[in-house]
Length: 93
Length: 434
Ligand SMILES: Cc1cc2nc3c(=O)[nH]c(=O)nc-3n(C[C@H](O)[C@H](O)[C@H](O)COP(=O)(O)OP(=O)(O)OC[C@H]3O[C@@H](n4cnc5c(N)ncnc54)[C@H](O)[C@@H]3O)c2cc1C
Ligand code: FES
Image (cartoon, rainbow over all chains, first blue to last red; front, side, top):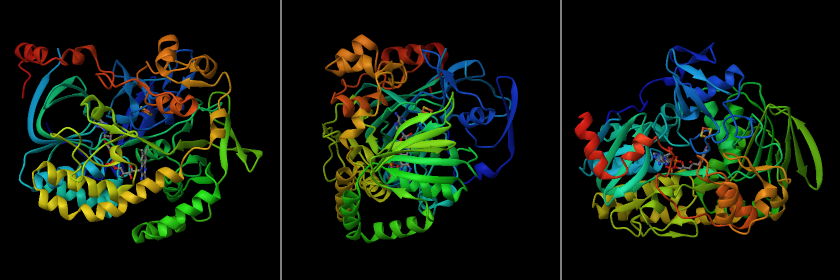
């Protein structure tokens, strides 16, 4: 089990990371979660079973409203995943 | 094929918030091999998440001690199952961890209680702690108009935090009455450290209107929030805003404790003076044993850590401090009870179960959670009732079913690991065991 905790590093002031949300480039600060990248792009995260657009509610991995597709993997809780350079995110579909 | 990684610890801690960090540190400082897992990308839990871990003095203190004590930390790792005595299963991406322990400390924290009202599913209507968490993970909030609503001390903490980040916080709507809040204030006077917190909070709020007897009745906008209608002293008022941050106090995360068959009393994990649950190998600290704030979580964490390591004399020395703080937890629960009017917030078409889009009218025909679940799929979506369970408990008085594994939805491949048998098979095939 490796230590992935971030203490000791200046996560949010560090460099910029570029990801794509539905093919559009979004630049965020290192340490930003995917949920925030999606909000910045101005789209919802997912459609509900009756087709309503939905976005983050709890911000802590409980509600599952922030689910998006990341690099082809569906249903990722975007509020608990930090952006990595080149990530391909599909949201609002 | 998924990797299965086996780890063995003297003490395993679930949750890397203040309680978990304190527990892991104290157990490791007592000379034991300690592991800690948390499903968030970093340590710190709700209050110290994101960059706060590097800025808050107390957070830095515990982070440094934790590092020095050589606790084995795995973030982004979610516990989902308990295949047998002394074992938990966790997943991290495509990897499954089989975590064996002699003693377990559960420090799984709490979540916000959400209540449904018309428009609460619109984009940019979030939890109070929810919006704060997003800002802590990079959401720019400067100049954004925010209404904060619901109940509990978290609303004020969030207001101060957002204001500090240059949000335009328009109002804090607290459903509770002045009378109850004054009683709460009197209780605070008995706790010097709480008074200090309250005074610094007062400064940090800097004139944001705080309105008791006030709650949201509708959020409006096309897809995204544009304005919120509030009820204030019997009248309605409309406020144009960018975000509505709304939460109705906290509910404890007791799922793992329930899975392990630890005794639950009045909704909380029951523990003795050493934070030991009804199961001798399982300890519990922080919010699952009662909602009492940061200081109590840290005190309980330390006691649980020392006790799990068999260092009872060190644990005992902290009991007095904890006692005083525990009293505060009781006061919190009594102060922020929900007013009955909130039961009529949802309209017939308001969605109550957001995973399965089940509206109020379909639920109100039923007399129990079980019946509603079977007929409507309420609570059967991925959140497994974590949002609609506490809501329907308040709206209809229903008690949720007992917890079943996996406690979080997990990939089918990872689910296969639920039986120890299949873990061995996976390991033989993949050679993935650590
Ligand atoms: C959303 C929210 C925001 C808050 N903000 C503030 C604030 O600004 N100021 C304030 O004074 N208090 C705040 N509080 C209250 C604060 O959390 C408590 O006072 C105290 O710090 C709790 O510490 P804890 O260690 O008990 O729990 P937490 O800090 O909640 O830590 C519990 C940890 O366990 C993890 N966890 C839970 N289940 C699993 C699982 N199955 N697998 C792996 N990990 C798991 C969680 O992700 C979390 O990181 C907030 C509470 C919430 C719910
Ligand atoms: S916002 Fe609730 S799970 Fe991500």
